Image (cartoon, rainbow, N blue to C red):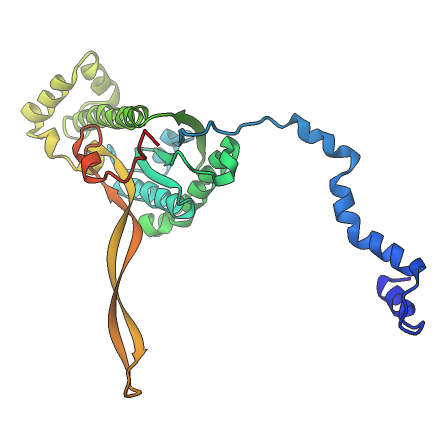
Length: 303
């Protein structure tokens, strides 16, 4: 007999529900709660506690998996493809808009670092939850916004990104981390700029270009660019030399809002309001100027 038939039968007896009917019904509707405390629940004890230490910045860094192959198969421009860099930044912005406790993000090439504020309680500060959410949001955004940057060029296969979580207890430690990533951007971009200039403009093979650059210092690479190809590295796009820094900033936005005037007439009126938006910067973050201009990015060490 169905549940509905049981209920109907119960209420035929002068509106009184017999206990013999109500008890089975109670069991039906409380089953999920009982199942949650089943004998199998002990398996939860095998889960590792990965709660991030309090009062530390939580940094989630993503790196493209096997992106050298991915770039070749999708014919990225060498040494820098502005479409690919733009897509990386757009995907990172999507992550920040989804997880507003991220106070700053820095990216270059096929990597992006996301910094959660020290007081964040997102996902109870569980490292696995934070990392997987950032990675999945970034990866899905990369696919979702592909056409916005690559047009009709097809995405041949899904990209992959691996992630890691690192904690930094002080502003000094965090700034040193971000400085390390930007220094890495400079080193790699200078090498790649010279390498591909030797190949594309100098007529060398990739093996010859690699051999030419063995043992060279930054000054040597700058000299090759300037003396042989009349290229001043310092005038190359800041996006390539400095990477991309994303932060939250307030921006005034003016929109038209239809309002009813006292004389009953409706009219479009310009309304200005302040909104927090993710803004991109391509500038030095190793020195003091950026941090002095944006003092609200970092929390006070004394808190």
